[in-house]
Amino acid sequence: MASASFSVFADSWKDESGHGKGRKHDREYKEEYWDGNCKVEREFKKNGDYKEERKCKEPRHGHYQQAPVYVPAPAPVIVEPGVRVHGTVTIGR
Image (cartoon, rainbow, N blue to C red; front, side, top):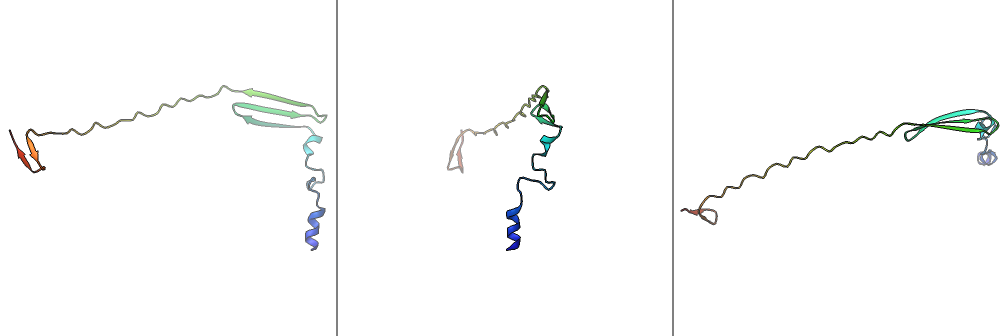
């Protein structure tokens, strides 16, 4: 019962240092990341100023042509002259 009551008294809005989750806003910091073809650099100042720079590269358009599909020629059908009865007897010319 005592261990269950400790979770009630924990401050969910503070981290282990006691400064809270929003610690980044009390100091200057930079972050860099890629957004598609653009590199984004952000600077946050202590007084609340914010600066963002985007350096974009041209998109890489790769055109990949599919490999050609080769269809084999159908096998030739050889028809012998004459009349064939039930596939066994051939009456020739």
